[in-house]
Image 1 (cartoon, rainbow, N blue to C red):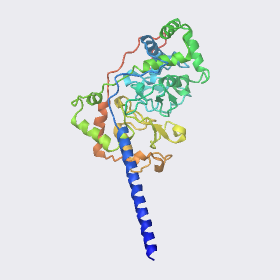
Image 2: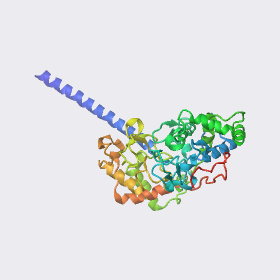
Image 3: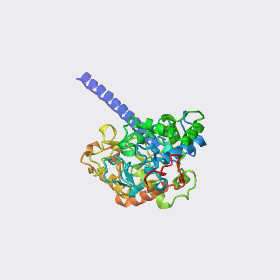
Image 4: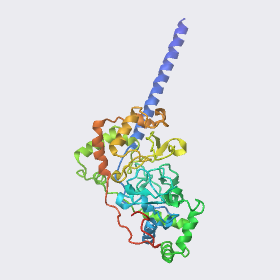
Length: 396
């Protein structure tokens, strides 16, 4: 019996030590996770310099060419849509539309309408601003690789060079009905080669002859888009040392932004972790089918919060018209309320459950978000484009 008692005591002590060791390891692991989250959940001013891929170094000639291409509807199948049609400087290189309208339409931003008859569908996602897209993928330590920068709501392209060609190939964005996706880029190259001014501009930009190629087309547009930077908002000034750049109420909103959990996904200089999250955003009734996002998971990449003044309506399908409605949506889903019947609460991103929003805090957070606006960006519009077509396509 004595030996038995001692054996039992021995096993109890071993178990207790093991438990304490396990708890200690668990505590250390949790502390490491907390430190890691604190490191990631930082925000800072945007860099003053922009990186470019090694294979696409910028030059004045290349940027000037890219700007003309950006405004020239010759890049669209029916010569009626340009890149700027949905990303106009007057609307912060975004547009005041929930879902973009491409070919067979006229007007700009919220005034744009399809012509009749029409067989072109709406673009199924909201047009994000191109301002600061040069910094896509940047992390809390200001590190990013422009050759692998994530693009689009569904991350389907990496780098501005690859992104630049996707709208041209998309039926509802620029291609239209008259050309296939496989042939449209070659059609555009042939058109450009038939214009002497473009021949000269491409040759100068790329310092070679016969320089009009699909690859150089994408490089020129990307080079121009990297100049569309708005990195001197009041928040940037504040983070660079000017403590009077934002008001007391905006500072209070900044603290709330962090404490309620918004910063879990909206962090880094661009206020985006550039990761996919499932939120169950309300559907847009203009779309015949619910957008299932990345790999049919209903996940979408976190958008930047910079220059929100120019990017309403919000979310991937433009279904929320104001910032107040966005915050009310987050309050709903943090409480388990389902706003999209196709996305049950158990599929919501874990970060959603950590949000602690209340109505009284929303105005302060919105005040803070307004410090991220910067209206000092390139608004100059070319008077003409080499094709001789209407600048920007059918936008009047």
